[in-house]
Length: 420
Image 1 (cartoon, rainbow, N blue to C red):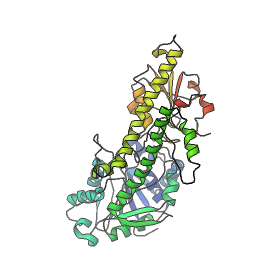
Image 2: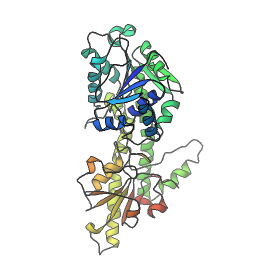
Image 3: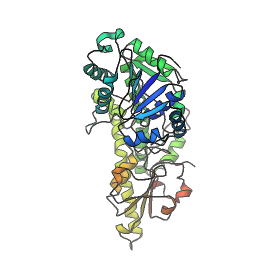
Image 4: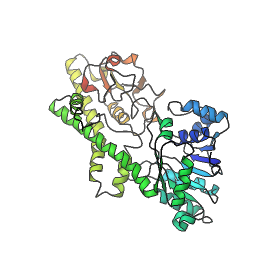
């Protein structure tokens, strides 16, 4: 362990903050985790987790039991502060930095000369500098990189995560890490910190490039997904099986088309491209178009489902719309996780619930409906209960969902690529 870093304070104990905190704790650094969610704090202090991530529960139990990780609702004095809070966008797709601002103002009173503050939250270009400005306003007795350059009292860096939900603990350690300091000493300090557990490379750059790097990675993926999603709409119009088409096209040695789905979700790919568009609206034309294609896909799915319900009623004239049993499979934004953030399946289910009297949802990774769906006509069901339902809509390729287990023959009610 680097003796320079004896105590780390991680602000935000969500899908990135908690695994990061637990990983540092497992490598011998005392960690105080901070979250505004008292329920999450209480669970962590009991050695339990409030999110689904393979092996995280076991790791948290170990480090809490050893006294290396404790959670609370306010920051504590530490050598390093890591900010891992949400960065959503507003209704006009402008970045919303209110959580970063709140975190900065909360930790500012505890800062002392020599501290390192890292913004891990995926952020628009310039957010790290803005965080440093908020800290400077709150602590005029200390100097920051924008004032004192390499001689600043406080080191500031942006070090975005680049991990896959479901493999977070492995990829935190094995993946290369982009280290973007506001000055070179900031980069060196942050690099030394992450080398405590990162086995991949710690690649040093400046804060703006690090911010743009994370946005670029996710925008690249968004553009490729948009191509697949647009292709699926075109194929439906031309009565072509898109799954077969992609499989054939991918036999070309230099073609690798992704699989289409009902849209794009998660806090990264569905959000990050808009941060680029917000900063450079005239230049980011392809990135904006890809985002619009993917954002439009849920509405297209809803239209397809309406057609299927209408066809079912036409084939069964003795039934009325209130008699039709409809099941949707999957709420998460991707397979085999419980993360519902920006999930297109959530948007689709919400809209479809307005079309039928009762809508049944099968999501094996949650035990109760999210607050957004409570007090509605949406019912959380299990797979067995829905086998004989009239209309089945597959939105997420969870491992539990197969053509056989669902008893589905109509490929047009499957909007994702199920595992064989």
